[in-house]
Structure formats: C-alpha cells, structure tokens
Length: 392
Image (cartoon, rainbow, N blue to C red; front, side):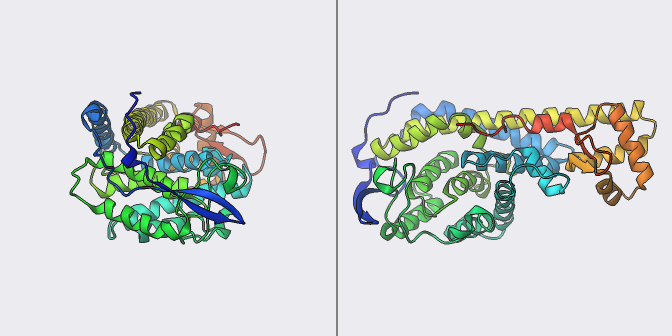
C-alpha cells in the first residue's frame, strides 16, 4: 500500500472536553470533500476493478433463477458478520434457526441483535424507494437496529447528547475520542450536505468510502455506529444507481482485515491519509463483489444439480421437489413447518424428507425422535463461509 504524504489541512482539530471531571482531547473532523482534493490518478486501476466487479455481480443477480432468495440469504450473512465485528458470537445458522424457531442456538440477545440488523437493512432499502438517504433515514435505521436487546437503553434513533469514546475504559485512556456533543450537529449537517453534493464530481464509490470514514469518526450514536456505518455504504451505492440489487456487503472483508481497517481509519484522522484508506476500501469492494458473484454461481449450480438428482433418483419426485423449493428459503426446517408451508400431508412430508436424506441433500441435526430439525447442509456451507465468530 502506498504511503501518502501528510496533508496537514486535512487533519481536523482537537478540542478539549470535560467528561466526568476528566479533561480529554476530542477530535472534530473537517467537512468533506477533503482539501487538498483526493488524488484520483493512482486509484483509477482499483476503482475500475471495483466497478467491473460490481457490474458483474449486478448482472449475475439478474440472471439468478431466484434473485430474491439470494438477497434474502446474503442480507442475513452480512447481518451476522457486521454484528460479529461488534462482539456478538452468533453464526448464520443461529440466526436462521432463530427466525424459523426450529432450534435456539446462541444467547437470545446475540441473535436478536443480528435479527434487528436484518430488519434495519430491509427497512432502509424499502425506504430509499420513496425517501432520500438523509440524517432522518439514518436515525430511523438506528431506531430499528437498537429496538430490542442490549442496545435498547442507548437512545435508539437519537443522536448522542453525551460524550462517547472508542477503546479504553474511559475517555482518558481511549484510543479515539469523537467530537463533543456540542460539535456533533454541525459535523452531521456537513455530512448530509456531502451526501447530496455534485460539485466535487467524485465517483460514487469514492464518495461511499469517504462517507463511511466520516460517519465512523463523528460516531453520532451511543451504540451501533459501526453497523450503521457499514450499512451506509450499500445504501449510498443503491441510492446512486451503482447497484440495482443490494448485494455488496463489506463486513467479511473488514472482519478479515480488521487491524488494517482500524489503523487506516486512524491515519485518515491523524494525517489526512485518505488515498491509503481508499486503496484499501476499493480493494475490499472488488474482493467482496467477486466473492458474492462466485457464491451466487455456486448456489445456482447446487440448486440445479440437486433438482436433477431428485428428478432422476427420487421415489416421490413431486413432493421432494416441492420441499427442495422450500429448503432454499428455509435451510432449517421441521416436518411441521413443511406441512404448514407446502400444503402437503404429514406422511407425504416425512416420506419426502426421508427420500432427501437418502440422497444426501438434507440431514437431520438434532438426533431426536420428536421435533426433529432438518438442514440443507451443502447450501448452508456455501452461505456460511467466513461466518465463524471472531475469537480474541
């Protein structure tokens, strides 16, 4: 990664704030766009690669036989990863079990936080169809994100009126202290203006990268800033027509490279090193889009080959294909779920499940005689790549 020259005029300023009798230095970022301007020339190769990867992903999504299904699952994978960065231990399997009430996994607060993230994301995408990306929409997303679980005491939907900090046990030994409450409103006003400005003529992907860092630096909420800041990238790209389908989610990349991520955020604040951050960000967009494209192709291939096997080898093709359809949307199911959803009798469902188990397409995961839970293992394996919880 290239080393950028220090840009003193990009650095922002430190102000003194008193928190609990302790005087600390809080950082107030300068408004966007950065000055001097972003040097786009060294970034053009990465920008082009990222845009190509996004275009390919967008095209693949349109060709998928069940586009809404891929989106349904990918949103959930992102919710798990984004929440893991904040410390939850839930897996994708935990969330899917929680949603189908097939089997409880991790502590309920962990899974509820992830479920709230899914709700906030889907709400934001629907809201964008009639409402601009704005501070009001960001507050609405935050309210849904923290509507239940551990965050519900942290002023859901409200910008903070007290000092927060990142790392450490108190502001005095924190790694970073965001702007004092008295400066948050002005910082956010400038942030919202930059969302909608056109004078800079910056490409949307570059603007998305700048907005993400600025939001993390302002840290306008008492809790949930990281999750909202990651969500903003995809919402901004959808709002600006870069993505037709919201399939770009950066949390796996940021989880994998989290030491570089936090270091580069701090280098922007301390040295104005925006170009180094943007190199990292654009690489992440390209890598993430390529991974999502490959996953889409593999999932489509799995569904097609499993359908062919059922048609060729099943003793009860019609009912087994019907259940295979439902397993694509609910990879954890009980026989009772399938009776309700498929409109088939219990004996038919049980016979079809036994057939799919014989073919190795589903597996029973509880070992119980009653309340048995079946999973579509090969599908979950592709979806779940990279979603083991963080350790340490």
